Amino acid sequence: DYTVGDHLGFNADNDALHFGTLPRGFTGFRDFEITNNDCNKCKVIMKSSIDLLTLDENNFILKKNEKKKVKAYINIPMDTNLGKYNGTLEIFLWKTI
Image (cartoon, rainbow, N blue to C red):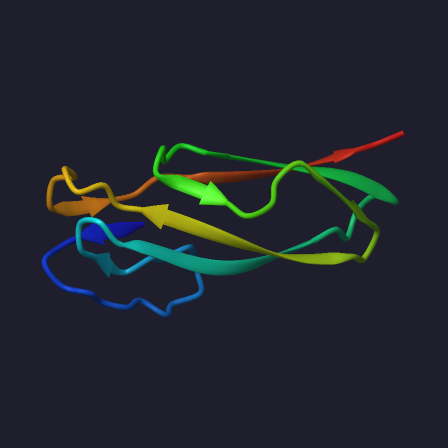
């Protein structure tokens, strides 16, 4: 979730990807970690319902017990309406052969 406002505000909670409050024209980011505890070799694919969200990495392979830190960015266009927005980021781990 993120809020578009007239100031910069932080939300450091780690129960979700909270971007806090961002003014128009700003970019916010959050790091999160993905761990493969299940399969010997998994392909990680992520899909977001938020058009403004981009990821520094997507569609990659993780071996069993391997971790990877990913950075998510929210880019707020200048014409975005003020208000609170939320969406989902789905993370799929597909077993590879």
